[in-house]
Structure formats: C-alpha cells, structure tokens
Length: 289
Image (cartoon, rainbow, N blue to C red):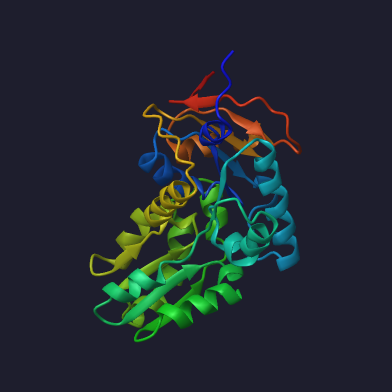
C-alpha cells in the first residue's frame, strides 16, 4: 500500500485552535471560512473558564495542558484563540515548540489607531490581557499619536459562556463599560477578547454608527494561512475540511452553548489527556470518516 510522503502526511493534519471557553469559536469561524479545506480541532478549557482574572502561573499551566492535548491529537499548528492566554503564555509555547507554527491573538490597536479620525481609541478587554507586559508593549508600539483608553470588562466572558448575548444584564454591563469610552469621544473600539465578537450587534447598537468596532478574527485567519504557507503546511486539498470540538468540562453541560454560538448541530467530545485518539472530523454537524 502506498505510504504518503512525510511532508504530505503533515499537510493532512488538522490545525488546533483553543480558548479558555467558547469565545474562540468566533476565530474558528473566520479560519474555517478562509481555509475551508483544512481540518480543524477546537478545544475549550471550559472547566477553567474564564482566564482573565486567574493568576499568571495558573493560566500558563492551563495553556500548556490544553496545547499538549491538541498536540497529542496530531495537529500541525496551534492557534491560541484567547487574548489573555496569548499575552500570558504564548512565548512559553513557542519556546517549547520552536518549529511549530503558533499563532496568537493581539488586540487590534494598530488598525484602530490608523482609522480613528478623533485620535481616540477604546479597548474592551479582560484584566488578564490589560495587565500583561505584552499588551503594554503593543500600546507603546502602535498607540502613538492617539489617546488609547482601556476598559476592563469583568463578567462579559461569563455572559457569553451562558449564551446571554442580548439580555438586560448583559446590556447593563456593556452600557457601564462603554459609557466612559463614549464620553471621551472614542470613534474606534477594539475588541480585546475573542468572546466579545458575539456581542457585536449589541455593542454597535449601544455605541452608535459613528464608532467602528475592530474584530481581529479575520486578521488572525490571514496570519494562519500565511504561516502555514511559509512552513509548506497548507493542505491544498480543495475539499471541505472537517471540524472536531472538544471541552475540558462536561460535554453534556456545554453542548447547547456550543451549538448556539456555532449555529449548527455538532458533537462535543471530552478533551483527552493524552494522545492516541483516532481522528475523524465533523462536516455540517455530522461525523465523517
């Protein structure tokens, strides 16, 4: 039986994408849209969500654990679809896996500053992202010439995790967080957490048409394509790639929210602690061999 060339076998491996919870599905959707022929594995660390207010050492441990689980499943690249995890632990991953393409999240301060007419930019993010040295370096590098106002948003991740995208409590939280930014005249608003794109309709309604909302998901998808191409790892198979969904929590407890945010039926599996799981993929909500 013909054995594929090792490089060809690597190209057929899926891309691993993970977040503290289900917010990274917003990034997964952009990657799937841009690279529909690539297989994808998505892992939510639902048993430990949210990361934003956790100690740095704990975040680093969880990122390492989830990344190793995905590597055990045979992924050819990792996408850290979480701003807090990127800011806190992506350098650890790159140090441990220097030859693996690892793509992280970065709040879109650069494009927000570039398009702001008022030269006032607001950033909505978790405490974990805002306190990181990586974020402060980002501000120093790209925030020049504009006033950048940061707003921590405790509680928003939990609202998205519960599927409460437009109820009164979520709206009241967002009003409170947007108010100081709008009072300061920001006209460009950066979403510094992958959960927040699910709140874009509500954010746009509260902020008004004069405020641009910056979601970095499309830019991350472009970067994934670029990095895979650089490493010769694009599958090049013009077929529909499959997706598998994993959680570190109890699948039955999180299934409904996954389907709510993904928008179609899916099979949610338990994230394994070790390798050795046979890879099958989901296509249009079904398992396919």
